[in-house]
Image 1 (cartoon, rainbow, N blue to C red):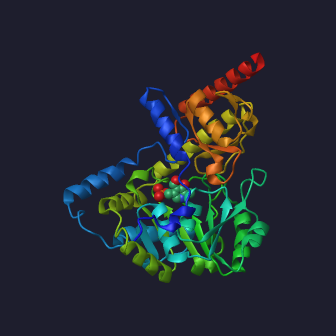
Image 2 (tube, rainbow, N blue to C red):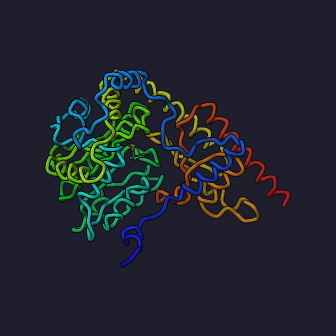
Image 3 (spheres, helix red, strand yellow):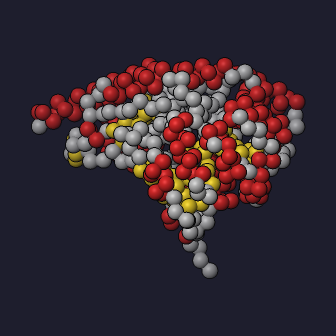
Length: 406
Ligand SMILES: Cc1ncc(COP(=O)(O)O)c(C=O)c1O
């Protein structure tokens, strides 16, 4: 008999952001006004008609029972309509699995597809959960590094080189968390050209697809390479588009035989996502989309303010991201600043220093596989962005004055 934890967890990294969050919470508890540049969720409320629809549904009743495991029929229909409108093909409802957020949709996919011996290709830096979910299944994440010179985008040649006979899937995220980088149509076509030659699953995390700026179109493999649809899985949800992270509704669109496996996985774990939350998601995606357009315009302005602000600071530089709500800044110019008697030597030091000295929360890039960088979220008002940038400026200024005196 053994009380040991499962071996599969040994390969899984605990979240490095937890310590940061704990410190930020501790500062807040003492009354410090911390700039929330670390968060990965919109600061807006969902469109008001979503809340009204929820009230109506609650008053009417009938949302306190289990639903079908993969979601209520009207929501699955609405998701199919939306995919047809935005991606040019019409999935059948049996291809849709509604889950407890996009993260859960990705986890279901990992359970259904990945096993020891499999490799999963992940352009890096990437969202922290991708490699960990792969590792949890005993499979191997193959991180393909990108940099700001290449616009944080993997090239066709890099992708080709990363795929081996063991590759089970390639997971693309556009626009990306943490870099905000989005592929152009030409770049995505080139990646699809490579993927056409290899029999691998193509998982596309499109959770930020409504948040692309400068008039750029979202480049979806489902649109650009419809011949690959038998191997494409689209992952999306209401969290970022409708500012509904807490409602926990996401979904995958997968070929029917894979969707059937996802039904089995979900049926033996969570069963259906919360009924009332499914109604909220239904209202969000079937209602008027003007709020989405407004939020996108606001995010674009905030992006411009954040990037200009960061690039105006000594020791920090940041390329302009095409989408999402993250600025992924090179912070190596801050290395060497004294932090409690020791020189700043890495991105984690930078993030903790920013928190202590400027009261700015952020996420160190190492967490995403790109040390030397810090992720700043601009899901906060322009006033807060300006004030946070000014606070960082003062911290840098004061550090350089102290250094000169020393
Ligand atoms: C790239 C990416 N995919 C998926 C998710 C998860 O979204 P959800 O809230 O729907 O689980 C996030 C959330 O931060 C994300 O950044």
